[in-house]
Image (cartoon, rainbow, N blue to C red; front, top):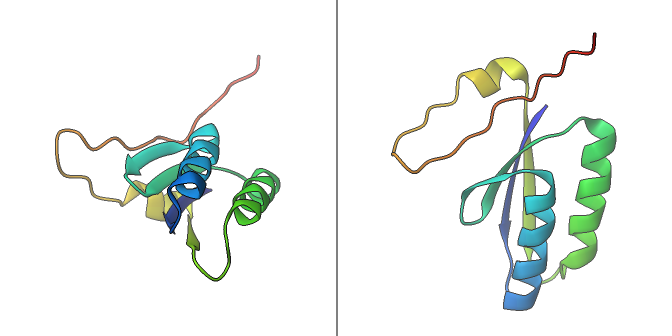
Length: 92
């Protein structure tokens, strides 16, 4: 599943740590927006790491899940916009 992760983090140090975790799991498409292709188990681990970094009363995380049909319908404009494609592996 394609997961869109957005955040608003009040403290610059926490902001940097959250961004680093997001970079481990996905691709930055805007300053505070990442695309991550993660199934449930991977997403659970990822979300747990993020939730452990933030202060609940000062910061905000949000995750949106898009199925493959919705992910294919996204629109992109601008030469520098980078989006991801679902990784496909074939084992023979």
